[in-house]
Length: 159
View 1 (cartoon, rainbow, N blue to C red):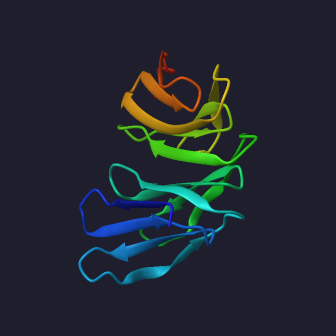
View 2: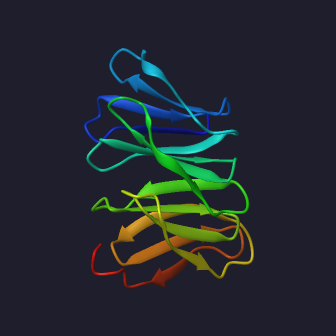
């Protein structure tokens, strides 16, 4: 297992695994909720809930990230394609309309509703392995290179 997080309400746990799936669990009973989320071709390295708990994003060693409906366990749209190596991390923006992924030597922003790429954040010389959204317009990227870099960016006004 590579990833385990609580849902925002604390009632569910979401795990990402080396068996290429993510799974929802009942936090009180420890029993699986529904079928495993299948759709990746390699390890699921990260699985996270949106802030409202309605969606899930997964990041995989298959070079993609995916959105899922957390209530019915079905994929939403097509995989996010653009990284050239494993996607190590993914997360939703605090206000929900963006997904941030990290892998290869880039971090990438995606529209969380359409799955369309918004921009790639390029500049590291080694793997970008983790993402954390600090504010809507500031992204911090952790790299194997020489530590985190803070990048300030202005997002389109629609976000």
